[in-house]
Length: 237
Image (cartoon, rainbow, N blue to C red; front, side, top):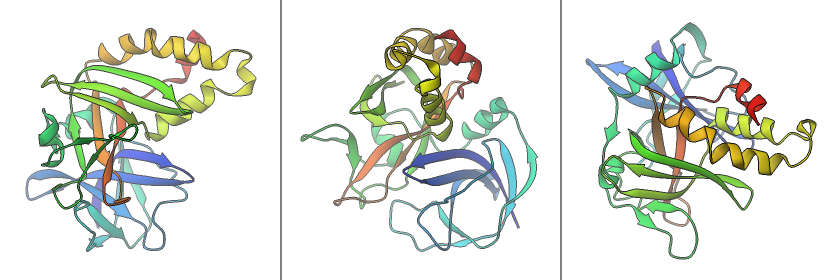
C-alpha cells in the first residue's frame, strides 16, 4: 500500500484529475493516480490535505506525464493534515523559480490566441510548484484565467484556473440565489480584497501543470492556488 497526501484536485469538464505527494527513498515527489477505466475520476469525495492509502502500479504514460500511476484499488482515508502542512510538504517537492525551470523546457506564447504551452517531447515533467510576486484573476470568454509574476520577474499570462475548490467558489459566487450584478461584484472582489487575502497569506503557493498533448502541444494550467477560498468570503461581496 502507498500513502498519498492529496495536494491537487482539478476540474475540467465533468471529470477530476488528482495529484498527491509520495515519500520515497527519503524524497518527496508528485504522483498522479490514474483511473484504470477512464481518463479522469468522475467522482472524488476526498479533499486536499487528506492522506489516503492506495495501491499504485507504474504506468507507461507519454512524456512529460511521468507522474502517472494506475490506481488498482480504491482510496482509503488514513488521516488529514492542515493547509499549512500541505504547503510545507509541497515546498519540499518539485519547485522552480523561473519559467524554464518549471518543466525543464522553454515555455511558448500562443501567437494565435491566449495561453502558454510546452512541447511534449521537450518537457521533463508535468507538474511543478512555484512562488509568485503578483497574481491576478479575471474572466475571459466565461473562463477564469490567471496572470502571475514569478520570483524571477517573468510573467505567465492567460492560464486557465482548474483548481476544484476555486472553481466551486466561483460557481457559488455566480449562483442565481445571490441576486443581481453577480459577475460585477465578483470582479470587484477579484480586483480588490482577493489580492490582499492571497498575497498576504504566509503560505501562499501555487502549482502549475501541463495538459495532455493536444494538437502536439501541452497547455499550461494553474492547478492549485493556496490559500484555498473560504465560503465566508462570499459575504464580503
